[in-house]
Image (cartoon, rainbow, N blue to C red; front, side):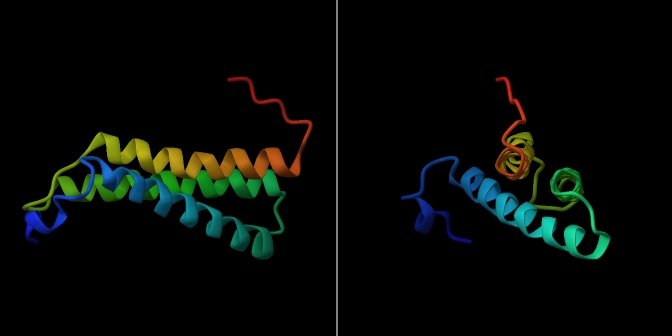
Length: 102
């Protein structure tokens, strides 16, 4: 790919893409757990977070063995933050008594 065509993008724009992709993917993972396994919403959100995080780590690990690709820990962090955001939103929205101390 010609990098001159992408020169207008900020340096770490791909991290936003990673975050958004894993946010959407994690959100979509919740519903199959809920429908097919009849799990509580919190368990569904937790399973979705674990699955999305494992997938993100696995894809970065696979990239380490490919030529012309490299593993980036910031990509892994963006993946985890995207999946974790869904977990926090679903847990908080469906259980208003849940206390999240930051």
